[in-house]
Length: 120
Image 1: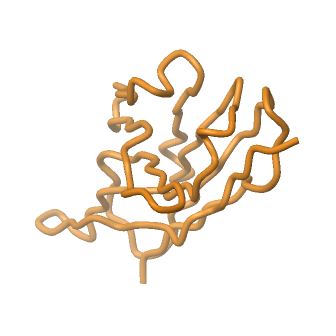
Image 2: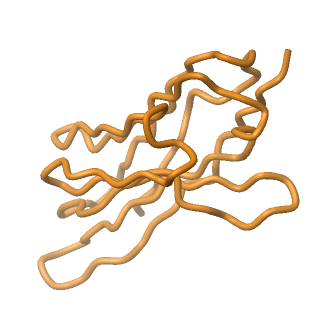
């Protein structure tokens, strides 16, 4: 059973710099793309950032220059360093990964999400 578990959310003051972590565990053959999405109250889920296995990154325009995604391949971890947070960053942040269970089969997996609330 493969699962993704996020950590690092909570109440953050404007301008704060929390770091989110996500650990993938279970019967994993390999992990391709990993990433972070977020969903603010009343809004649809949106891309935050993605990272390929070899470290190529992609960011949404709203976070580019403020957030940094990274990963630890041997430990099946992905991180999101968030800087200069503002109220518009308040959302539930979801970890994503495309995980191969064997050489021939893989699928998308999602974490349950971690809430980040930016407020003074």
